[in-house]
Amino acid sequence: MKNLVILGAGTAGTMMANKLNKVLNSSLWSITIIDKDETHYYQPGFLFIPFGIYQPEDVVRTKAEFLPKGVNFIVDEVSRIEGEKNQINLKGGRTIPYDLLIVATGANVVPEETPGLKGELWYKDIFDFYTFEGSTQLAKKLQDWKGGKLVINLTETLIKCPVAPLEFAFLADAYFVEKGMREKVEIYYVTPLSGAFTKPKASKMLGTLLEEKHIHVIPDFYVQEVDNERKVLVSYDQKEVSFDLLVTIPVNKGADMVEESNLGDEDGLNFIPTDKQTLQSKKFENMFVIGDATNVPASKAGSVAHFEGEILLENILSYINHLPLEAKFDGHANCFIETGFGKAALIDFNYVTEPLAGKFPWPVIGPMGLLKVTRANHFGKLAFRWVYWHILLTGKTMPVTTHMSMAGKEVEKEEVTLN
Amino acid sequence: METLVFNETKIDVNEEGYLKNPAQWTPELAHELAREVNITLTDKHFEVLNWLRAKHAEGVALSIRKMGNSGIVDIKQFYGLFPGGPLKISSKIAGIPKPVSCI
Image (cartoon, rainbow over all chains, first blue to last red; front, side):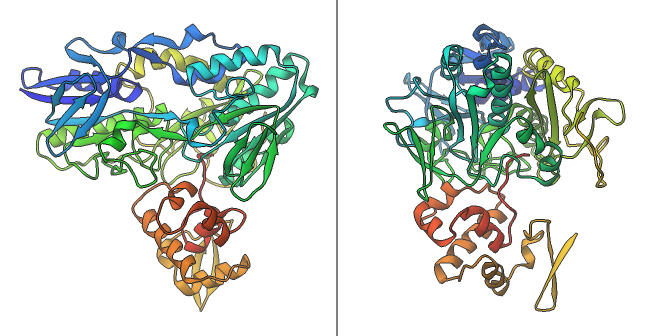
């Protein structure tokens, strides 16, 4: 009997457990999945909690209910991967041997990386919304907030769901308009990149949203520290931005055990060097990496994990059968962008093709519009929670191609107005 | 597609002046691109540029932090070499794509 071990029972790990359980011969392979806790959070839902659109209970389930029978689920924290010995050491003291390893340990926000962020103002005037606790605390804060200068700050460029901070800004605008207090709130979007939009077509199609919604953008701001006393962000080149309420997107890091196992990339963020096409680890050939845990230059998002999953399944079967790894991930991502007031935009792109305008998933009929702000896209985003629990996690096939398709995309330059 | 002509060679660039093909880069071109943003390249600048080009060729997503942990410069020194927006400016001079988000 051979052992296939999956580290992490989040989106990517759970999906892989379901896919592999269906295709591997159970008399030859035993599948084990390991995670340090038993709760499965629907992470895309964290965005909606601060504004009361989702309640905390809407995003919480158990991990066990999405894992198939026949897969061993161990609740313990990995202390170290010993790649040379093909074994995992658990904090509880056990050692788990493996023949094939899938690392799906994701990414977490680490506010401690930025001096002053997790100081005396933490969860008083400074909040994150990428955690269950942060988003629920922020919901309470916004209920009674009297207004002032709301600053949304990205501490880093390599973050989970890179559009979520922008969606937060749009939803905050709508929230304060609907509460009748928009004129009491200034919204600033402070980013280390060259702008809120960095790609030409997305800028052209969606760039005007920021002006329409009176969201001020401060680009090229790379925060070094937060001065709690004066309530200002200070950048590495000594620029300052003051705030009354700071919503931070802290530095994202991979799991601590990546560092312990000496498997991380050189930036110290614990993301694992991974072949961007085959998803094989660059260090050990019987180790594959999926989802937010990799260092591949794709977005860290559930849709990416899903598309990677289709490729990884093929490559794992090839690997087991001593065949070349022929399935190649193209960097495909597909993300909704909530823009407030019951509308959303949609983007679909990969390593080489920037988000383009058009219809999705089918040419002409859509029903969803790419790089357009529509109601259909918003309903697509809300429907996605059901799709996530019932189709994506369980490893079923989605009606969307694994490789990005050019069908429905507008390639030639043309003027399209927002509706 | 836009092009710029340098030493009688056509270089393909995008609408913001970033090279479309890193293989068309030469150190001489780097000097020219740096002059446009009022930077005079030193050996230290070239250490940074070469490191960025090597990482880009490996298919790695780049960041200011990663450069700061490279052992070549820390973040403050990186700002000192390429003031204002160090990664976007150095990427342009290094002939690799602009650091972007997904939109």
